[in-house]
Image (cartoon, rainbow, N blue to C red; front, top):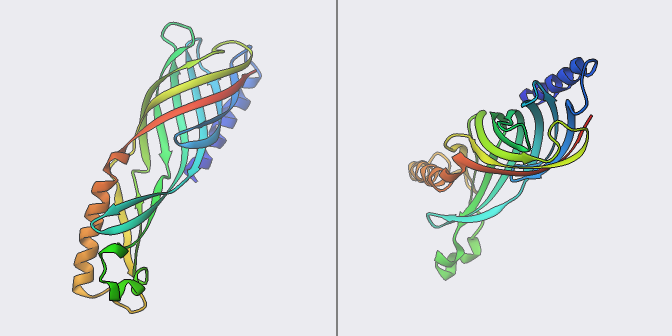
Length: 221
C-alpha cells in the first residue's frame, strides 16, 4: 500500500503542475538496474531541483552454503522511491537524496550438504528442509549521484545513477524445519534454528548497504 501511495502522489503532483508547466518541467521514464525494472515520474520544482517518484521490481536467486547447509536464496525486491535531485551546476550532473519504501525480502530454502552425510544416509538428503524469510527496514534512506542528458530540456534523454540504499541489517523471521516427522519443537532443533538464524543474518549482512545503479530512458514534456 505504501508503494501505491507514492505512485498516486506523484501522479497527482504531475496533474496539478501540468496546467502551468514549462517545457522540460515534467518527465516520464523507464529504468532498469540493480533494484530491478520500473517506471518513474519527475517534476521540476525549480531550475535545479527535481522531484522523482517511482516503483521497481526484481526477483532472482543464488546459492550459498552456511554452516554445512546448502541454501537457495531467492531475493524479491519491491520498492517505491521518492527522490530529490539537485543540479549544483545547472547542468547534467546531479546529486540525489531520498527514501525508498522498502519491500525487499529474501526467501531461504536449505538442506544439509549431501557430501557430509554418511553413504547410508544420503538417500534421505533433502527430506528435512530449513525455510524462512529475511526482511529489512521498511524505510530505506538513499544517497547518490548521477548524470541526466536532458535536464531542463524537452524531449528524449538518458540518465545514469549510482548510489547506496541504507536498508538496515537483515532480520530472519519464521525460520523452521520442514520434515516428514514433527521435530520443530525438539530442543536440539530449536537450538539449531537459533544458530542458523544468526548465521544467515551474518552471511547477508552486506545487503544492509545495497548498491544502486540504474540506467533511465526518459521523456521531458
